[in-house]
Length: 284
Image (tube, rainbow, N blue to C red; front, side, top):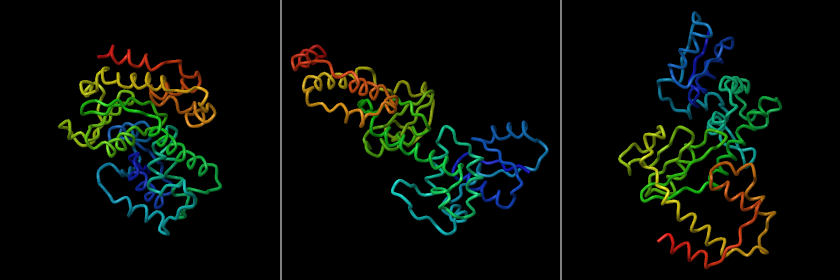
């Protein structure tokens, strides 16, 4: 027997409940039904298949209560609720959803096993959760979008799948602008009703290329850099603190964060207020 489930929070929870009743079943995960059918043909096409998580919208709160009936209490200030835990883990680049389902079943209703389990698998997936959470917070800290007339745009390269979280976070804080977050070949758009689109959608970069602010919109950032350099007093700069607040590992999230890290490592070139005035006049 095979349990085919969608690699989402709901799919993982439903697969865990099915695995409790059929512990001998094999687990196969997919992002959509087409991918799932292709995997079934390659694994065992004659086996009985139970498909979960692809069609019905089910209350996730009710599912998590069935899996962990005793409820959840925060062990440390860094811990997320079980639903958020599963969502964060699924975003990790190394996560295996089938392995996560077996981990949830192995807890046998004790939610503390996810956070302070002694087994190696529990520790590894708890680390995945913490890594994704830290990546998200640092992405919000170090990424600075380009501001257009009606669009807020940013290009990011995070190590895990958190670009949609950043897009929603920016949209809440900028309700008067549409937010576009580009990650690889895909783009996330939020507050899309400003552009006469859906509120939130994932699409290809080519389809929204005409909405991305032009290079002229980024000139303000360069102008600010020149002004900042002109006001900078080098002997007051705390390089140790700067390196702590802008770690090297976090410098690859966006071109702007790379530039900030370059300033931390190499220092800020000597500039004067006259340079700022000349550049401003030249831009006009």
